[in-house]
Each structure stands twice: as structure tokens, then as C-alpha cells.
Length: 264
Ligand code: SF4
Ligand code: SF4
Ligand code: SF4
Image 1 (tube, rainbow, N blue to C red):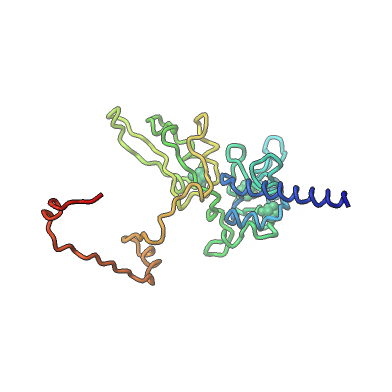
Image 2 (image 1 turned 90 degrees about the vertical axis):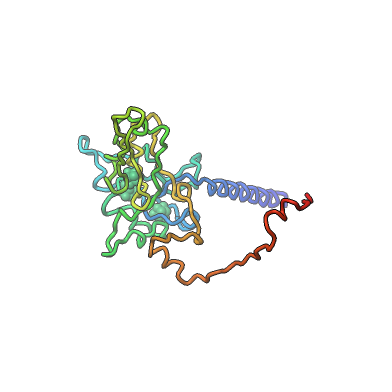
């Protein structure tokens, strides 16, 4: 009897610890997932932690060191105990190994659970298209990016597989010197896939450009703001019911208020 009570107690304690662990890792919003990953909460529910995506990533044909003929480290890692995310789920750290945006995206079709959603990566021709991936968004920290100091650097721009599409260079006059120009890296939100090649290429001590998960990097204007110059955006609210508000205009004039006794 005492032993069964003890086992029930231990099981309950284990359950509590596990649920505490999963709650705390669910609250780790800074993790980058493979291409096609569902939204974080749905991803955690769907991923069966089989590791097939990471295996396909490391074993892909393009991941062989030309000099040694050996396989290099893969982009995708499977979370272990001590990592601040759910154990057994795939993630990547761009400064270690970024995603090389493989054309055939071998990590995705092997996923048996739909946690990596293949349809989200199909283009108009129904072909897998890595440019449709949205693993995160690169963000430039202007204070530490030396291009914003006026020093010529285009390392991130050159490293981007979507050169001149996901990062563009913006010319600006350098008013401090009066005769030079700034060449500023600007990330294009709708094209950046979050591969992290720019972050890995950045020359500063800590990268001045880094990828954040979409939920962290992107704001949201809300449905009630509409771009008046964008017919597509207007289409979005074409069925919205207008709401009229009326305010009774005061018949008094400003002088009446100035002479009024106000109670606070
Ligand atoms: S697309 Fe990225 S994550 Fe997928 S196999 Fe290629 S390098 Fe690995
Ligand atoms: S292949 Fe799919 S289910 Fe398996 S670990 Fe990767 S994401 Fe999870
Ligand atoms: S993460 Fe960087 S390198 Fe990758 S697509 Fe975005 S801007 Fe380009």
C-alpha cells in the first residue's frame, strides 16, 4: 500500500515537473525552426521528434566537404536536455550553421507528421520553392552595423542567397563628412526567408544583423488599419460594415467655458 502511494506520488511529481518543463520551454520564443514549420504552438503539438528532418539535412548531397569528402555538420540540430526548448525538436543557430536554402528542401518532404508543412512551400507551379520559406526575419541593429558608421561593408548583402531581393543596399549622403555616401543594408520583409546566412557572414564581434522568429520580429497593425493606396489591402475589408459615430456639437461658445466654474 505504502509503495503504491509512493509510486502515485512520484508519478504525480514527475507529471508536474514535466508540465513545468514544457510550459517553460513553450515560453522560449527565440527559437528558429526548419523551413515550412507550422506556427510554434502547432509545431510543438505536431512534431513527433523523429529527427528525420535533421537526418535529411546532414545527409544531403550538397553537405559534403569538397576537400575531405566528409559530411559537414548539418544545419538542423535536435534539442537536447539543457537546451532552452522542447527536447527532441529540430532547430538551428545561424552563427553555427545557417540554412543553405537547398533548392530541393530535403528536410521537409521526409517529415511524417506535417509539422513541416510542404504545401506552404509550393509555388504557383506546384513545385517546392525554398524562397517561400519564412523561418524568421533578419533585423539590422543600426548602432552596431558599421555600414551605418560610414564604413564600407556589404558582407551580409553579398552572403544573401536572395541578393538584391531580400537585402538591398540603400545609398544615403553622409552629412557628417559631406563628401561620402552610406551604403546601408535594408532587409525586405516580404522576401527574407530567415536563413541566417547574413548573420553568419556579419563581420562585427556580435552580429549586427540577426534572424529573429517572425512572431518576435514583426509587429501587427491590426485589421482596422487599411492602406488607402493599396487595392489588395482594400479588398480585405470590402465586406466590413461601416460604423458611424456622431458627437453632439455644443451650442456654447469658447467664452462660456472660460467663465465656467469647473469642479475637479
Ligand atoms: S533547406 Fe536548410 S534546413 Fe533544409 S536541408 Fe537544406 S540546409 Fe538543411
Ligand atoms: S521530421 Fe517532422 S516530426 Fe520528425 S522531428 Fe522533424 S519536424 Fe519533427
Ligand atoms: S536571413 Fe539574411 S541572408 Fe537569409 S534571406 Fe534573409 S536577409 Fe537574406
